[in-house]
Amino acid sequence: MNNDNELNAPKKDYCRPMHTTEHILNQAMCRRFNCGRSFSAHIEAKKSKCDYRFEDPSKVPSAEALAEVEAEVNEVISRNLDVFSKVVTRQEASEYTDLSRLPQDASEMVKLVFVGDYDVCLCIGAHVANTSEIGKFRIISSDYKDGVLRLRWKVDPER
Ligand SMILES: [Zn+2]
Image (cartoon, rainbow, N blue to C red; front, side):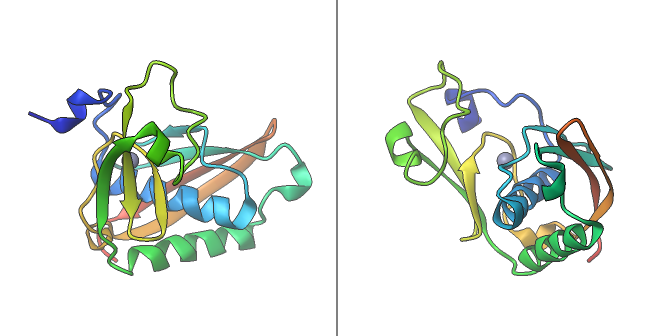
């Protein structure tokens, strides 16, 4: 039996390398722009997109800044970090990450997913075991509209 079922059932069976990359991308965006993790994401095997809030147009990252994000994500992937999870109480989880987006009816035990020591967040999706399984990350395009920066990106199996 899949242990996830005892917590909150996953909404979708994500493609593991793409979804794990989403974690790394979110952390890279947070570190550089303090924009928070993507509030809306569409993860597919071939192409994905993530939306970030940038209320102030002057704070929207330039193409150069996004190229640096791309480089950072690839650098993190190349560290061959273990991806692992811990099931903890909400109280313990709050020491690691923001729980404000956790639904009110979520179970008392929640699952933290770590990408080495680079990222930790609440997640119930499926992940690779090590970032060496991911490949090469590439931002395909970005656009900004109504306070939202949308990144379209992909992962090539080969590095
Ligand atoms: Zn996840």
